[in-house]
Image (tube, rainbow, N blue to C red; front, side, top):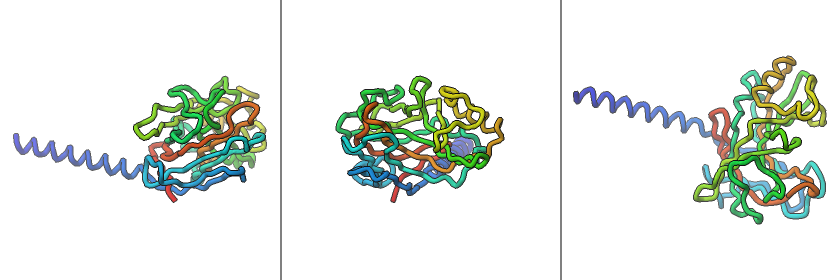
Length: 250
């Protein structure tokens, strides 16, 4: 009996050790690129004052009143090694990152609902997939959304932990358009281009498109001042998808 008990304990230790090694292996340190689009006074850079994973997170801050039109925001850009969508866009379903609003002047987002709705407490904060369609020689941006968002980004934020960190998770539906603002072939106008990632996989296959995921971005901003809040301060880190956890470090 004792030998059997020892064998069971030994097996459990092996399982725990193996699980720990898998979990440790799933965390990868990456150094993202930053894009500030020359927004006056804006900041997108590493910071050690607020962290959730590793020694740094990324501060994304846009001053009030500096955005005057469409198309301006901040990016934290994680390069993908040309990942073929043959692996499936659906692997990015439920993609998430950590966000902290403790230093945001207007407060924090509501919990568990698609956000932002106006009036918002900050500029939109969301994740995007940047694709290259080699078949049509176009770049494509995909963002999580809802049917009633009219193409706007939507994320769902959890309640904060003891240090103010929330999990920002993509909605189930995604919208896509080319960088030139045109539709992919075969798509109907809005809301025809709003689908789940599994449906996007089917669309890519049905149209025999050669598409690769080139970047995964965390984006802050891209709101017109006539339609919503364009500014604020957030911290982001720990981008998670397809069983990977990415730690933003210099």
